[in-house]
Amino acid sequence: METIKKEPIYDEPISPETAQKYVENYLNNKHFKPEDFRAFYFHRDEIQIVLDQNKDKEYIKFTLGMKEIDKPKNGDKLFGCVMMTSSDVIIPDIDITADDNDSIYDFSRPVPPYPEG
Image (spheres, rainbow, N blue to C red):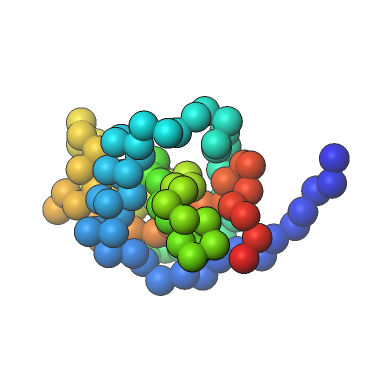
């Protein structure tokens, strides 16, 4: 099996509305199969970004979602993602737009991987 080393992703945060759409896609998708995504990789620097930008927060919340990737090429197929956000408290709900969130990041690299663009 070939191993791949990838550099960290330094994307800007996504909006709470986009993040909530990803969560709703995950919860409402009738076509998702467990083999569609089994694991996710994050580079240590990506997690450090969330920690450094939210020093006053106690937790990092990882939330599952599904999103479109290259719609002209892949149609309506949804691909798994995991979003990271900081939190002061543990919220017993998946509402990613809750007031305790500062920035929401999607640095996830799924296994199996997204299709190459």
